[in-house]
Image (cartoon, rainbow, N blue to C red; front, side, top):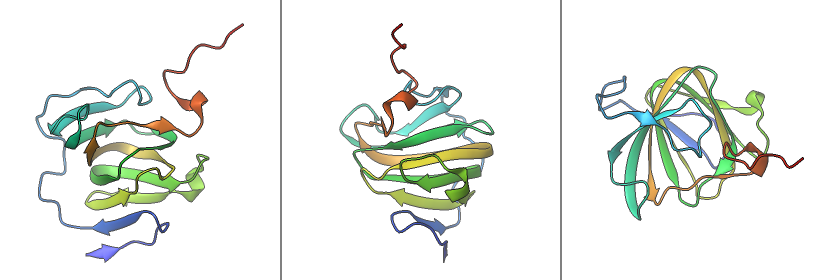
Length: 150
C-alpha cells in the first residue's frame, strides 16, 4: 500500500481492488440533478435519500467537472476505472488537482470544500452516511440555479 502526497485533508491510498475495474451490471440512471449534467449513477447499497450508510457508483464522461462543493458528512471515494482529478478549495483550479487512478481510495472530511474532474471516462464508488447532500460553494455553480431575472 502506498500513500500519495496530497493536501492534508485528503488521504489517498493505493489498494488492490476487490471487484472488477469496470462498472457492474447495476441499474444505471441519470445522477441526481444536484450533479452537473452528464453523470450517471447506480445505488450499490443503502438509500442515499435516507439516514444511514450508503454506497453509490458514479460514471463521468471525459472532461466532466464538479465545481467546488462540500457535503455534511465524510465521503470515501474509490476510483474503479479512469482518473479522477481532485482539488481542495473554493475555486476550481485544475493545476492544483491530484490524480486518483484506478485502485486509489481517499476520504474527504465533512464540510471540506473540494472539486473534481474526470480525465477520460471515469467510474468511482462513493460511500457515506445519508441523507446525501451537496452544497456548492458558489450558488451560481448549482446546476438547478434559478434563471436570471431580467
